[in-house]
Length: 137
Image (tube, rainbow, N blue to C red; front, side, top):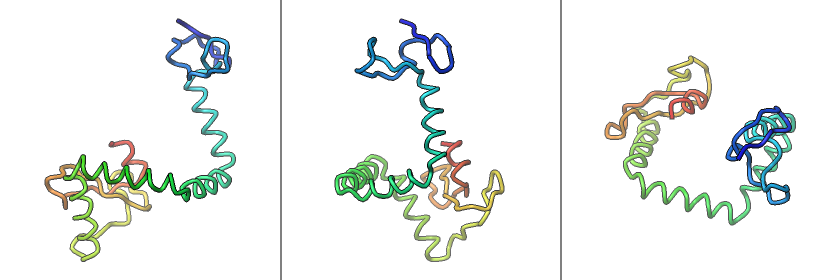
């Protein structure tokens, strides 16, 4: 089945539209791509409001519990990753590993994260900014 997006005007497969029970055909009138662009624009134009909203929302007990449960599940599912993360953290704390100030890919001075190329060698890390780390994963 095909549908035309009212935003971009393109005819796309129905899978390219979000389900919406209030619509006659059961799908939103604009495609997923256009919906995501609109959501990003809305968030960026009201960023202070959304940051405050996110902070308050995370303080809700059920969200804190879900987050903690997710962390525990991840630790059990990937014990090697967890071990590598705390090994790096402890090495930084003990000054056995020095965290640089610049991203190793783009050179940007920013908050950096340790990217593990191989979890079996936990101290072998590449220091990346959030943007570069997101592109690698």
